[in-house]
Length: 254
Image 1 (cartoon, rainbow, N blue to C red):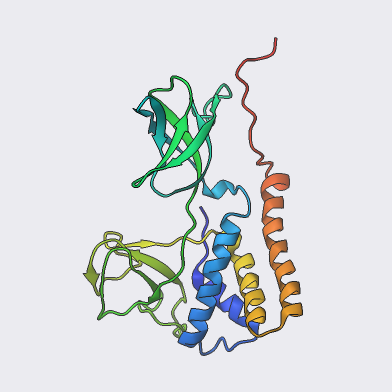
Image 2 (cartoon, one colour):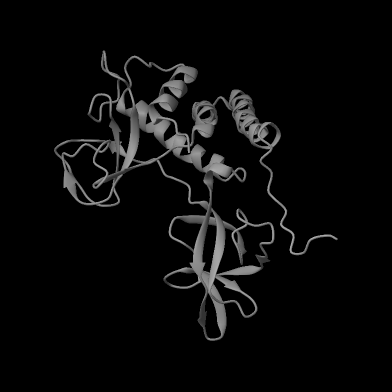
């Protein structure tokens, strides 16, 4: 999946909001980050983006005569369950299912005498953007998130002369102190923002900023412009690339 640096979104949003891009303050950073966090979820769930769809093999289980599969970790909305991988054969059969929540997991209950391995088609869970600037003196625990600029090797919010400004969010995997999130993949995992959402997020931030300033009419215009960029990406997928959902046939015509 092609991704976009958060700093690209940050700079674009600051620019179109009419804020000072030459001296990015913590308040400006945190405001744009929070706006972007809302916008990335809206874009993520706006349509069935091929970049975010995954197919995974799961094993059917039985409890109290009920057949089910467990929703994989990291899975968001489930689109379908298949007897066979629909990417391999057009004779894959779609299985009806219902969602049941227990105290510990989300189950997808399937009818009939279903057993063995099945294929689940789902959308990845939306990412979150909530990290604070990285600090080399802080002890980070698993699950926490930071903002880190790999160009300067710091949590700095402004570009340094002669260095690429390439800041992103990283999630801590194991407790650590003073390890570079951009290269230490044992301690950190990068939060990838899909490239196709970049323009929408920046302009969505503008709409939210105008709304926060009480400029509601201007905010509505900005909202329409932001939505245009999502629709443009859908046009690329459907019309230009011809990526429409396949129809699977169980029997062939003679």
